[in-house]
Length: 420
Image 1 (cartoon, rainbow, N blue to C red):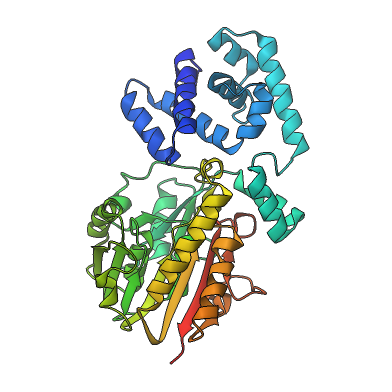
Image 2 (image 1 turned 180 degrees about the vertical axis):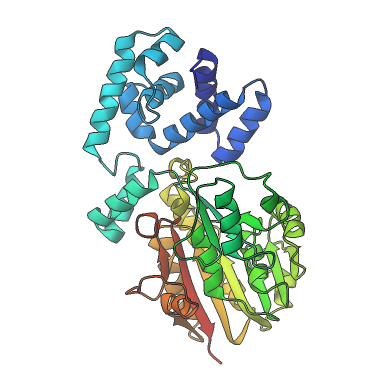
């Protein structure tokens, strides 16, 4: 792909908007492309690659560019992580070759130095070191800089994984089975599969392997009553409906009607008939109260910082702050306490986040257990092993999935049971 001045300046304009405003980078980038329809496919690819590379390595690239200005950041990205030729970039922008060669040299020096703290906010690096030790925090920080693959989930109500995997491989897709999730398929890179017939007919859904494993941990059975307490756009709701073969009933609760609206077309595509999306005003909505003590399995996929998804959403590390973590931890505790009222004796409750921080994870669960002695923890990994999911044994009762250990998003989950 030949570089042009227009595509490079478009990348600078895109990153300016993303760094300057709150919100998810993927949505901001989609909005940018809608506003710049003249950009061709190659130009869009360059813009997207540049934006995500800058978000992942912002601090390093600022040093490589000797600048905070967006255009210089894009230049440093092109000759640095994207590996473009210095002369090509210099010619496209009519800039001195020495300037681009200097950036390329500084990039290689930074890469060789391999400082895992370089591209994390200081507060986050310090917290990870305090919780995990510097060596483990370094391995985690390094893994979070790598782009995530595309993980898919096979809708078991529509097809078996082996058949779908064979079809994708026969069509030339670099697809393989996920190491742990029994319905997962992994494809390297970020290929565009949204128009593939297997997507259109609901056989495949995008879902990270860690998210799939949380659903297997809850292990809903056919005919049961299940609540997905913070359903969002319904990825886990649909995974549970698939496991239940559309029997029983799943209540998909969320406070956002917009998120639930995103669930509806996915639900129609999946063919699931046992899902009932319902908007609730708060975690104490009367609709929730009417189900108190009646539910077999409750999933609380709590709103969180999302720091476990930095491979996919690198902008999150620049948006979150310690005060946000404390505020979210309080909200998580309130949601968990409310959701727990739904569980009937002997039934199960899973609390999950895609956070890496103890304040949002085990500390929330331990505080809940301190005030709810009627619940006990069920060790998570043995439960998954009993489902023939070959996760290595853990020396803690929680399910903790990490990109450096499991090649998944960072996820935490605690399985609890209401004593009969």
